Length: 246
Ligand code: ADP
Ligand code: MG
Image 1 (tube, rainbow, N blue to C red):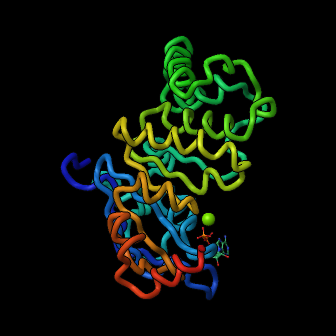
Image 2: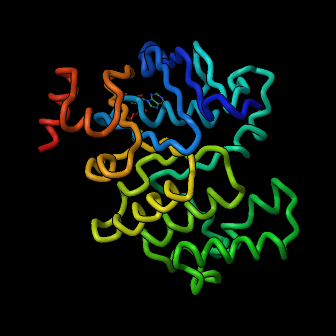
C-alpha cells in the first residue's frame, strides 16, 4: 500500500473479447479525492474498463495498481481487492430479498465481520445521510429507482472503500429521479471520495468532474479538466463526439 501515489493506476491495459479489441492500451491515474468521469459512445469500453478495475474482467495485457498494489497479479486475492472498492451499476444493484438497512450493512457484517449492532448504527447513519432514514425497513421493490440507487451508493460506501466505481448509475432512471442520485455523488465528492464514473450526463460531468476522459473504441482520445474537454477540446474526435450529442 502506497499512501502518496495514485489511488488507481491503470497502465497499458488491453482487453479483447475474442478477436474484438475493446481496450487498446489504456493509461490512467486517479489521485486520492479525484473524480474522474469517463465519457464516450456506447460500446467505447467504459464498462469494460471499470470491470477490469473491479476484476470482473481480466486484462490481456498491462496492469492495474490499487494504492500501489498490483491487483492484476494472478496471485492477488480478488475478494480482498473487491472489498477495497465500492461499485454501483446501472441496474439490479440491491439484493431484492433484503430490506434497505440489510442491503447497506451486509458487506460490513459478512466481509469485514463487523458486529450487527455496530454495522446497523453505521448503516442507519448512512441512510440518514442519503435522506432515507425512514426507509430502513423497506424492500427494494417498494423504493423508487432513485431511492434504490441512493441505497446502492450507501451500500457501496458502507465499508469505506478506497475507490468508488459508478457505471451509468442514472441511465435507467426516469429523468426526474436523476438529480437526487447525482446530488448524492456530488456530496460524496465534497466529502473526499475518490470516484471513477461513466456517465452520459454531460452537464454533471462538466460541473463535478475534476477530470473528464473521452474514450473512443477502447482508446483515450483526450483527457483533461472539464473546461478543456467541453469548451476547448484539443482533438477533432472529441469535438465530433460533443457535436453529435446536440
Ligand atoms: P460502454 O460501457 O462504453 O458502452 P462496453 O465496455 O460495455 O462499452 O463494451 C465495449 C465493447 O465490448 C462493445 O463492443 C461490447 O459489445 C463488447 N463487450 C462487452 N462485454 C462483452 C463480453 N462479455 N463479451 C463480448 N463482448 C463484450
Ligand atoms: Mg457501459
